[in-house]
Length: 236
Image 1 (cartoon, rainbow, N blue to C red):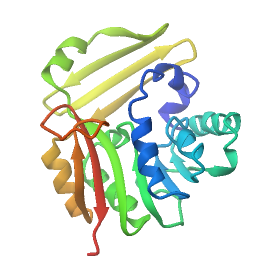
Image 2 (image 1 turned 30 degrees about the vertical axis):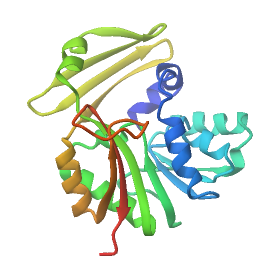
Image 3 (image 1 turned 135 degrees about the vertical axis):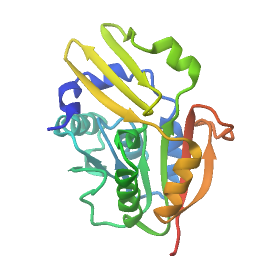
Image 4 (image 1 turned 60 degrees about the horizontal axis):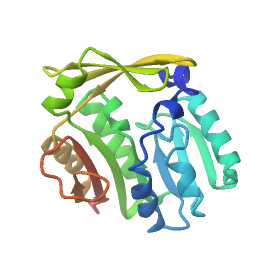
C-alpha cells in the first residue's frame, strides 16, 4: 500500500495551484505525437490527462492504486480514457513493455528516492523504456535558504482546509513533508541533490544532458531551487 493512497482524494485540491508545468510537458509530448509517452509517477493524471487531450497516448505508472483510480476517473470525465493506459508499479521497475521516444517523471517524483542506488536504478529503468535517442524529462528541486526559513516546522494552509508542514534537515538533505485535510493525511520524505550530482547520475545511467532549465519557461538554470532536466539516451 502506498502512502499516497491515504491522500488520493485530497491530492488534486492540495495541488490545484500547481499548473505551470502542465503546458511544458504537453509541449514536449507534442513532439512525439501520437505517442505513446510513458509517465512515471502519473498520480491523478494532472499531466497525463492534458497530454491525452491532445490526442497523444499515455502509459502511466504509479505505486498508488488510489491515485490511479482518481486518474482513471479524470480521464473518463475528460473523454480520453481510451488514450490513458494505467499500470500499478514502481518507477524503479516500471511494468511497461513498449519502447517509446519520451519518458517523463514530473512534479519531483524522483525525490522520493533516498539513495544513489535507488536513483540509478530508476534512471536506468527509464532508459530501458526508451528507443535509441529517446528522451527522459523530469523536474526536481534543491531548496533555498529563504524557503527553508519561511516554512520549516510550521503548519501552513496551502489551500482552504488543507494544511502542509515542511520539516527540513539540511544535514542529510531530507524534507519531511506532511499534508492533512478533510479527506486524508500523509507524511512523506523527499531527498534532494545538487545539479552537479544529478548530472553525474544521469551520465552513469547512460544519458547525455540535452538541457537543464531553471523553470518551465525554459529559462537557463543559474543555480536556483528548481531544475528541469532533458536527457537523451546515449548509444553506449
